[in-house]
Length: 143
Image 1 (cartoon, rainbow, N blue to C red):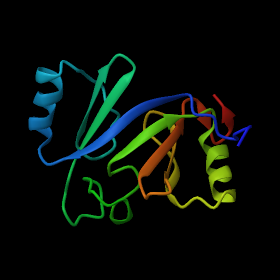
Image 2 (image 1 turned 90 degrees about the vertical axis):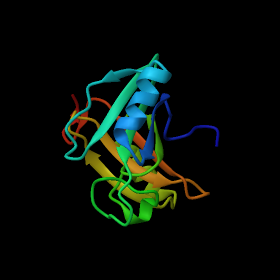
Image 3 (image 1 turned 120 degrees about the vertical axis):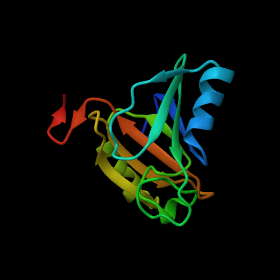
């Protein structure tokens, strides 16, 4: 494809589902030296860490749970509460429409995050959960 309709700007974050949030916080902060940063209130526990332009988002695994708390199978949990990686794009709603037109299986979204970003989750050809999101686009257009 010479002129892609979705242009990824950067890899923004990787979300990791963990069994013990505090143990993982110590690992990423104390061992790896990442800085804990403010996380929007999603209504479930987690941590965000920053190092350079890279963020790691942790959520806790709740086996068998299809509600907030995380899980390993994207089909069994709410959008974004599973292992995934995220790409920033210009317009998540336009990306969503294009993904639908292209026959890509959508996992969830578009969804407005508590910090104002729009998110869409979908599956790559091997079943990996991928997120695209934008900063500053609202349902009424650019902020």
